[in-house]
Image 1 (spheres, rainbow, N blue to C red):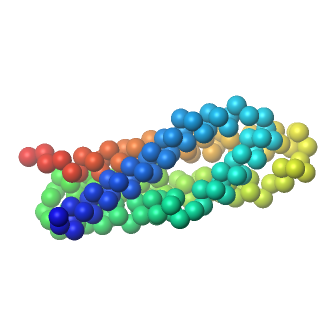
Image 2: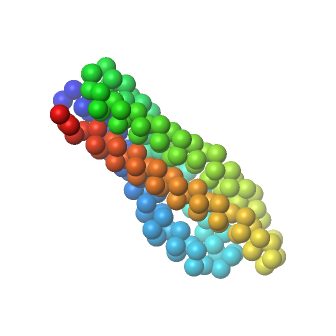
Image 3: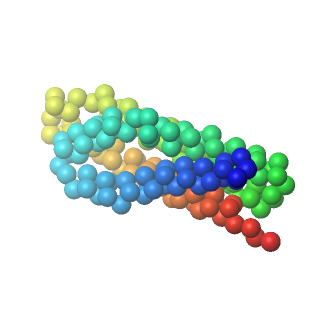
Length: 163
């Protein structure tokens, strides 16, 4: 198996893992946490935000950022125009909507929440903090989920010969 094919397979695997993680979070975690009271919701999200910062997550999240451009470059070098265009679109989508939106949208909200003293806050303070966090975080997350799914789909399609 050539390094080009292996790179494309790794791009599918890593982009699929991230799309699946975000999809699962969208389908189950957001809904489950959304049903909790303000204090429990905020505590739950603080815990999740700490737990996700681990090597397995970073391998997929950062690995996708590295492997998609590598697969794109490989397809260009191989003269595989269709795969190149699909992988270029997948790379740009992931860069902007998966990685970029996470770093510029979700992470600042996570950092603000991490600095919030849940145990010292009044019920009104908890309600306000949840309102400031939940709606924008969920909106950014839905967008990045859809973008990562599309990036994954394009990466899968890059394996198919369309001639």
